Image (cartoon, rainbow over all chains, first blue to last red; front, side):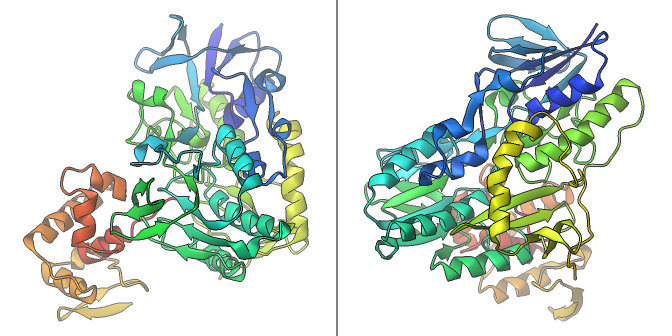
Length: 411
Length: 102
């Protein structure tokens, strides 16, 4: 009996468990998936929780509900990976030997990287919304907040879901309007990038929306520290932005277990071949989702597309065949813009998001890079798709793992 | 597109970054620095040389990496190349604009 071990049962790991369970011969392969937690969180929901759009029970379900029978779910903590000797050492003392390892340990916030972030104002006037606890604490704060300067801030790139901070700013605008207090709130978006987003066409569209919603943008801001007494953020160049309520996205890092195992770069991301998803250092280790260092968005849609290609590659690897160099960095993200609208972006390593229709060229029904209600309905419907199709590895009709160029207006 | 810098024709992109690193020399760097209102000192050149070395080794650059390089800390990096130091310094160094992640 051979053994394949998946580390992490988040979006990426759970999808792989389902794919491999369907495709591998159960008489020949044992599949284990390891996670220290018991709950699976629908992370896109963290964006809606602060604004009372979702309730906590909408976004938390037991991990075991999504792991197929026949796959062993091991609810223990990983001490470290020993790639040279092909085993995973657990804190309970177990050594689990693998033939193939899939690293899907994700990434998380590291507020300790920024001086003063976890100071006296942490979860009083300084919040994150990239954790369940953070999003919930922020919801409670917003329920009683009477207005002032709200600053939405990105510490440094890369971050999970790079459009989420912008969506947060748009939804905040909408939320305060509905509460008839928009005139009491000054909204500022602070980013280390030179503009609202990384890709030119999407940046232009998103900056137009910021302007329309009277959200100020401070770009090229590399934070040095948070002054908890003065309630300001200060960048290395000496620029100061005051806040009454700071919603920050701290530095994101790969899991500590990657650092303990000596397998990561300076942010604990595992060096990975961006087309095959094989580790650059160990041929029997594959990496998907937020844990890798590939230059694609850290997003569930990316993990979904990766999982389809990685499943084929693992079968090729087992058969001793060359791997498919097929992953193109495909990402597909709804961007909530407030007031019941959203836009949709679809892009990859080489093609930036442009206008067009999706998934059917010329028809839609979704519109690319344009605000519409149907896009927003798509985003809300996505929660159902996530729990009922995506995690289970069911192919989403009409959406291919590699990006389609048809129906798009490239120059 | 072509641009005359320090008396020699060099290839630049629409944002003014050199697209062909071998065309760079210190005189070109000095003139690009003047366009950004920076007077180059030996300290500036040390940082530029480090960026060029990393570029040749195909190491993607970030403010964080430079802060941990031991060559310059982030505070000083900002003093040398105010506002957006990585972008400004990359332009002077004749290397591409750093790709901040997706």
